Length: 163
Image (cartoon, rainbow, N blue to C red):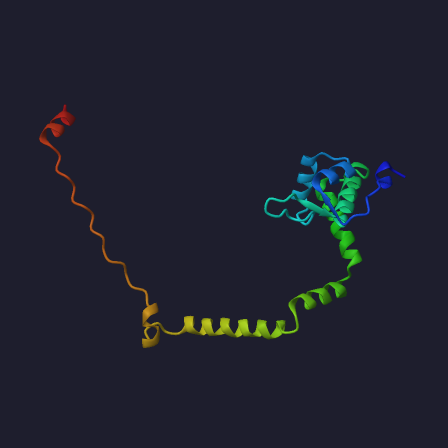
């Protein structure tokens, strides 16, 4: 049993960053780098408030530390391993049920409505722009822009150039 497995987590639901660093025995900059690699780690800080971590986040920090320091994985390797474990825990059918629940019962109806609107736009764009109803969409050639006339060069300046 490694020393990382014997970490005792206080019986609370939220922890501040210094507490997480103390429990996990990592520096704050290390924790911040892990947050960059694992964006869902921690709860975003509120206006003027400290960044807080849930108990599950603290457990995940300890797991990441074990993957890095005990198993010798890189951050990318640890991320892959955590994703694989998450996929194994949450099978494909359960994930689809979660997505369906998030979308709601009228999701199919809303998607069909968007699809119909896109088809109508495609029909409008495909029509001949010469028709009266679409005259405002017809492209016109830009007006010709005249270049300003060249300024006459003083005779003295021309004489200097010739010498």
